[in-house]
Image 1 (cartoon, helix red, strand yellow):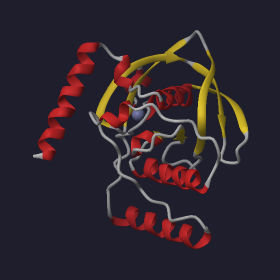
Image 2 (cartoon, rainbow, N blue to C red):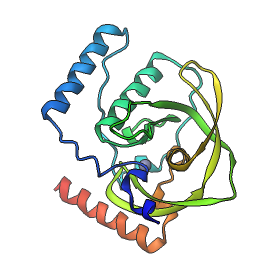
Image 3 (cartoon, rainbow, N blue to C red):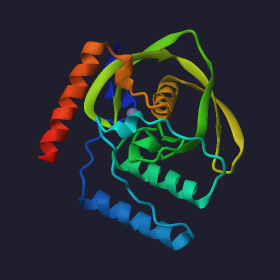
Image 4 (tube, rainbow, N blue to C red):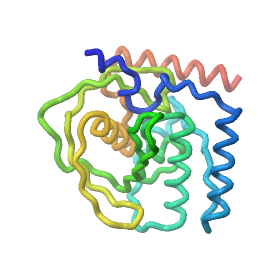
Amino acid sequence: MAQLFDRRHGCGEVPGFDRPRGGPYAKALFQRAFAALQSSPLSVMTVRPLVILPDPVLRQKSEPVTTITDEIRVLARDMIETMYDAPGVGLAAIQIGVAKRVVTIDTNKEEEARDPTVFINPEIVWASEELRVYDEGCLSIPEFYGEVERPDRVKVRYMNLDGETVEKEADGLLATCLQHEIDHLNGVLFIDHLSKLKRDRVIKKFAKAAKRDAA
Ligand SMILES: [Zn+2]
């Protein structure tokens, strides 16, 4: 049970990482982005703004990617940058307002080396009968967590940035994360897996906050 309450095992936002905005981290980000600009013909990596509940964009169904273009490569790079900046362990393109079936995930801990994977058109082709509960969070629903039960292991089929079809088996946090992010591509949020009472309560809270921010 202890694992349930370890936020690092949730998908999405990781509140244990109290990484300040600005300061040395921002400087490092800028330096890295600048280096990328010099070394790549593609545009500079950019942290893009996140779409937050109750924005209806989050309910949109994303379109499959047919060809790997420079636009898709830039999107994937920006998603990775945005995911690390948040910081989070997974991101779906729709969370930065792009309705394309692209997901980025890195389940490594902050102190470990970065190891991002880009999943294009990911689909679950097999799921275990055994289930597992994780305390999930979401970058589009900041500072809200809820226990969600999902298959413990899954097999996912996706296209990588080289346009190759790959199959991968995942368990633990990666399995949870993949299912959470693929849900996003179908306009489904983790709060849809909670009780109606809990879901309505969080939607109401975020709608109120959005109204307050707009005023
Ligand atoms: Zn999410």
